[in-house]
Length: 88
Image (cartoon, rainbow, N blue to C red; front, side):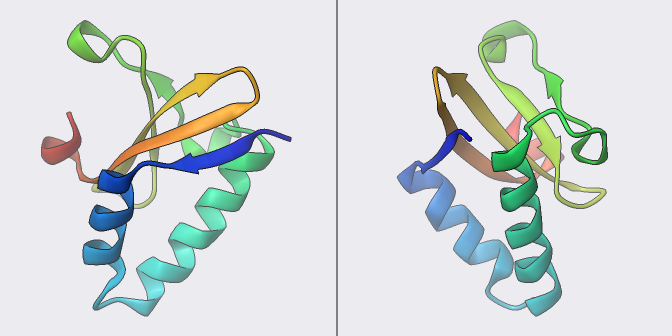
C-alpha cells in the first residue's frame, strides 16, 4: 500500500477547508483512505492533468473541491486541495 505524503501547502489548505465543516472533514478522511488503498478507484474520478501540471493527477473530494497529487514509487504526494479554479 502506498504511503501518503502531505506537503505543507496541502496541510494548510485542508485545515482551511475543513475548519468549519465536519461533513467535509469526514469526507476528506474517507477520500484519503481510499486514495491510499487505490488512487484509481472509480469513485475518486482520478485523472491525469495536462500542460504545466502534466506530472500530476487530480481526484474529487466534492463536486467543487479537488486534490492534486503526484505518484512516485510507493508514495502519493498530496500537493494541493481546494476549489477547482484554485488548484489548477
